[in-house]
Image (cartoon, rainbow, N blue to C red; front, side, top):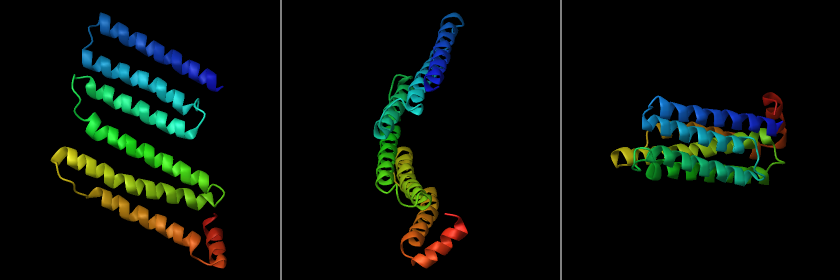
Length: 187
């Protein structure tokens, strides 16, 4: 089934590339939109390889998604002939997200026999809470030259509060209290 889906996607992508080639050569389509379209279609084919789990290891999958994303943003940025935002904004964000995803997967594999209904939301809340300030700092530094935090603090505080609350409920309460909470929350 997976091979049939991939074969169908490959045929669709080849058809899209042929259509783009005809549009470019016969209708005198402008160069920049054509290049954006080709880069997007080719990247979609590589993402389909990753999404359909053709790679054996989860870490290889995460790194491959990072490599494809880096190639995509660098290709999109280079269409106009110069690199302006890819190396100092997009690539650091991609590297950060890949590292956070790898860390979350490693922690999940280490504690996968624990209560997943509490541990997974804790990991997600902490990882998003840590990534958002870095995203804002990179964008602020790129746009204005100074680093400031505004909206990311509004994301960081509630997510860390929820994560610490779940962790406290899970680890610090007596067994009798945890059983009551599990029954109430259906965990």
